[in-house]
Every structure is written in C-alpha cells, then in structure tokens.
Image (cartoon, rainbow, N blue to C red; front, side):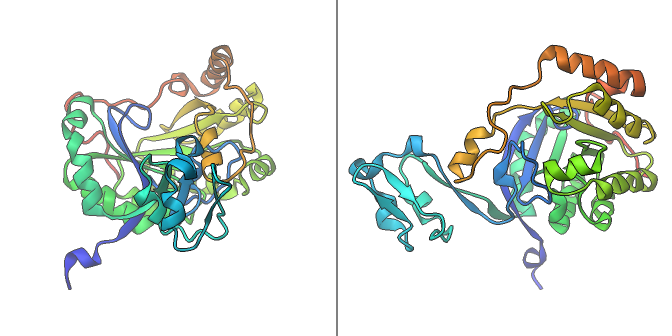
Length: 326
C-alpha cells in the first residue's frame, strides 16, 4: 500500500510563523481544529468546532450592487439581499466554500482544511534557520490537538526527524492515552490550567477540571524529565485574585521541575465571533492591568519560586535537543 495513503491527515485552521510566546525561541505554531472545552473568553472561537466553518467579514463585503458573486455561486441559496447588503443564512449553509472561492475581497473564508503531515512539515521547514539560531522549533496547538492524536504524534515525530524541537499546547481535558502517546515525541509540554476550583471550572469552560489535574500529575510521573510549563490565563472577574493564583502555584509546586506562567486575558479574538455568526459571552472586559499582573506574579513567586514569572526559554543558542525523556 502507498505510504502516503496511510499517512494520517489532520484538520488545521492556521499556521503562525515567527511566534515568540508558545515555547522557547522562535517558533512556528500549527493550530489544529476542535476543542474539548468551551471557555467563555476563548480568543480563537474558530478552533472550537472540529469541522470547517465559514467566516464572513461584513466590513469587507462589496454588497449586491457592486458584486453579489456569492448570491450566484452558493448551491444552497444561503445568501439573500435587500438590494444593498448581503446576508448569510447559516442554517442553509453546507460549508462547501464556493462563496469563499469567488469572493474578490476575501470577505468569505473557509476556516479549517485537511492536510497531510508532509504538507505541514514542508511549510514549517521554511523557517528552519530561525529555529536553529534561537533554540526554537514547532508548537502544536489549537483548539485541542490531542483530539487528533494520530496526526499530532506523526507531526511531532516528523519534526523531530528533521531535527526540530517539538512542543505541545493542550488543555489536557482528553483521554490520558492520547497525552501519553504524544508525550513520547515531545520536547516541551505547555498545559493550560484555569482554576483549581472544579465547579468554577465547569461554569467557565463546560467541564470540571478533575481529568485535567489527573492527567497533568500522571504525565509528570511518566515523563519526569520533560520540561512542563503550566499556563494560567488571568481572566478578570474569574481568577484574577491572589488566592486563585496561589492555589494554582501550590499545585505546580507539586510537579517536580515544572514552571508556572501567568498570561493576561486579551480581547483580540472578539471580532471573530461576529464573523462566525456567534455572540461573544465576555464583552467589554478590559485586560488585567500591568500592576495587577505584577502583583499576581509576585504572589505566585512566593509559593513557587522565580520560575513562576519566567516563560520557558531555550537553553542553547544553536538548537539541539534541550531535554531527554526517561
């Protein structure tokens, strides 16, 4: 059988180059579609559903008078017009992408496409020189990449065979077998932890945090030498208190060698909800102030030490493996 035919495929919605925030050094982030949580502040709503979606940016639309190509192209008559504006009935939309293919201003876009490991690795290799001189590499994120474990594992394995560092960003609300499967081909693990309060976690994300906490503990036991950074997003009115940060810092202290990173909430993804025909559940909330973040970092450092305020950094200038699994 043809090897290419057996290669797992995955659905991604973005490949972001030259990232400095999702692992050490300069990195390329591959965003996989589908997520097991529904955080009400999510800045990547296009990551949540596991299938392709249609995004429509009304501000780019030329209208029926100047264009109207989507009206003529859609096989399901999902678009209507009042003579000037154009409207999309998402109930009738089959997400075929015909509208996006003909839209001259890219007001219509398909978010999510199926790709092979080889296709992604070819794109990643374009920035190989930056990885080498910064101690960077590839980060697989989402969404939740462990909902596509075979593809994620193959992608990480392929990257390592090319001499690239691999990192995984996960919410850990997945079967542990998937986390362990991919852990064998990782150099770093970045895992989100919103709160230690399981009831509050369920209200905010749609699921309790028991599976997440168990998975993190088991992963540390199975991979004691693998660098782990627990990332806590600081959400105004939800977990932006010293007590909340202290409780997460205490948990991370129990994970030998793990680091804690506090990330401020931002509103950069708010406009994406309208483009997807959804409502944003967390409007008009400002990001935490610099003073607030510094106070919370100091609180975390009291419990967990200096690594609580330092993001994961590369340990070498010229690449090479930075960790070993045992």
